Image 1 (cartoon, helix red, strand yellow):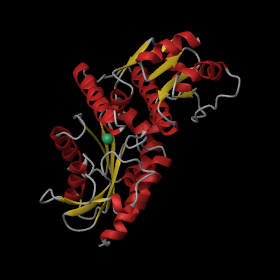
Image 2 (image 1 turned 90 degrees about the vertical axis):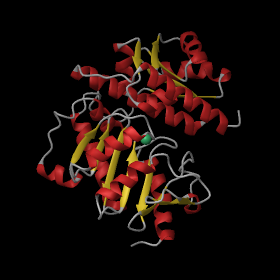
Image 3 (image 1 turned 45 degrees about the vertical axis):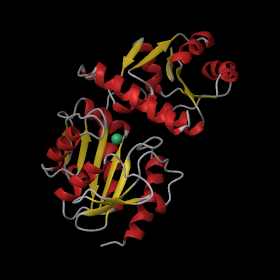
Length: 336
Ligand SMILES: [Zn+2]
């Protein structure tokens, strides 16, 4: 078994890896590493991965529920504990909000065709039912999926949980999961798959430039999914937890004018701009990157589920509740 200090270092470093691989945005997701039969170290709640060092990692005892460290353990420690309890040889667990696995978690899981090699590489795959983040219901649902023997769990309307014998295997599984889900996803209008860079002087950039003096920070994207979604619907509803939290229950599409975008951003943190993409209102670049990534993911999810004719929005109550709790927590953190 690994020493606690080594495990803390690995976990702190993999947080950054998680962010760089775009498996999560900002402070979302969490990582843990087993250090004993019933103990593991886990990333703390609400700290950005860029700031995180080994000293911030929390030691958690799954049997007593006690923890040691200067920070609170991630609120999703329960699903990590469930994974270690289910698999005695599990050494590393990652919880992500990865784009394509999230889309398949919404629709099309039953139609997902994996080769034997893919199935083996993932260590089995399962879909768990929805539960509010950090809730007992979510833990119970994930536990039931782990009990099927699957090491890659799609958490409906939320993200994924990936279990490996070590960090390397867990990350390989997370990337493999994204690859197989991307291949089955209908939310990618262009085959390139990569977000298109908006060139200087483009129409979207011009709108953002003219609005910039009125806002702290504006981020924008012309990911093909945002363009296609802006054309398909005047409003999309949150299907995923993190959209409900960070953007709100609804994402609106407005005409491509600075006036319309500026007006929408008075009350919304993200808005789709017809035929051009999306603009997000943020506090800084990190916040803007997270918001654009979430907007892109919400659009991929929208296109995918609507192509399959199989979409489930979060309930009005859940979506509004999450937005409310998020805004309260967030304003506290930024000192407001
Ligand atoms: Zn999560």
